Amino acid sequence: MMAAEIDGSGELPEASIRNIVEQEELKWIFVGGKGGVGKTTCSSMLAILLAKVRPSVLIISTDPAHNLSDSFQQKFTKTPTLVQGFPNLFAMEVDPNVEGDDLPNAEGMSSFVSELANAIPGIDEAMSFAEMLKLVQTMDYSVIVFDTAPTGHTLRLLQFPSTLEKGLTKMMALKNKFGGLISQVTRMFGVNDEFGEDAIMGKLEGMKDVIEQVNKQFRDPDLTTFVCVCIPEFLSLYETERLVQELAKFEIDTHNIVINQVIYNEEDVESKLLKARMRMQQKYLDQFYMLYEDFHITLLPLLPEEVCGVEALKQFSSNLLIPYKSTSDKKVPEEKVDELEQRVSTLRLQLKEAESELDRLRKGKQKMYDDSVS
Ligand SMILES: Nc1ncnc2c1ncn2[C@@H]1O[C@H](COP(=O)(O)OP(=O)(O)OP(=O)(O)O)[C@@H](O)[C@H]1O
Ligand SMILES: [Mg+2]
Image 1 (cartoon, helix red, strand yellow):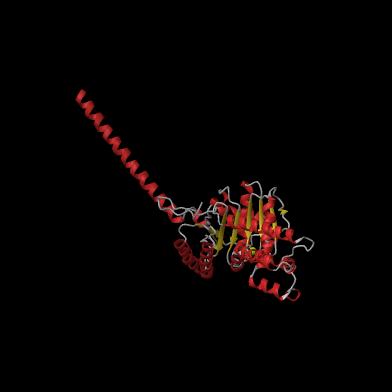
Image 2 (image 1 turned 60 degrees about the vertical axis):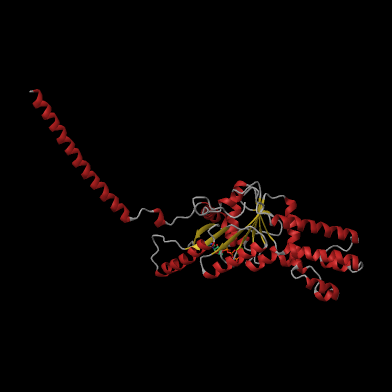
């Protein structure tokens, strides 16, 4: 499925992420956006919703400043761990930078090798991301949700397949040119020395296959989608647009925007400050609706407290499926009750009048009949 279709009636796409939960083939879901907007909260809730309908779900944090552990209030590591309270929801935190540290530093490398590494920026990060994806591929989860790092970092990782393909192609070519040097190059990528050259090349070829496969999957909208999380503020709107355009460039599907921290007109909101913020938010909400009319736009209310722990996440996740209604929306307004009472009493009066009229007419008819027979 591509971007959400607007049906013939001109109605907007449904304001929920139900479309994702119901897209059965979906394998990779990226959740991204600016720092602090609620990526971890949203990806955790999405994973919880998916766990209800999928055999197995894995949520991965690729943010070096991990917070899945905070969100679920449970410690996670770089191997998938069952989230407490779920039979089929797993979480892991991978740090793209840690594995990179295992590589020899520039001093330890020959100038030739360091030159190569410099020629392919991001190759070490891309390599460890690829290793992780390869591992995850073999684990056979039904769907994988990525809680990504703030925008710039995420976009770099999504570029990784082409970065890596370039790097590997370069290495293959080098193998033929400089037979002996290849072992140095492969050491740089953390491949064990004991392997013979052919084994090493085999491994690299294998890696290239995984990359190509993942690359293809990421560009297939049936298998992969990107959920943009944001808040109704200028910078976030701006960053969302940048993200949507970059994703289009990488041919990665996106048709869902979650706007978090929306201030609703609750009946107990009297603060002038909040009312002013509400008006400001409304301005940006209007712009989101205008810019992304073919997207599913789901709003999440700003809560007075943090969303921490499985119970809070579960409860809050219902808003991703059923649009949130503020207390003042749910309640029938005072004026409306008055108005209805007024109408009912008018109708009662009119009914009474009509009844007595009918009564009079009946009596008149009866009298006419009586007169005619007598
Ligand atoms: N709608 C909301 N109402 C109140 N608090 C919220 C809401 N959404 C998220 N939070 C809280 O705001 C904080 C930041 O949210 P979260 O960690 O999900 O953002 P993030 O985008 O992942 O941040 P980072 O960029 O640092 O990874 C958390 O403490 C979370 O509990
Ligand atoms: Mg986060």
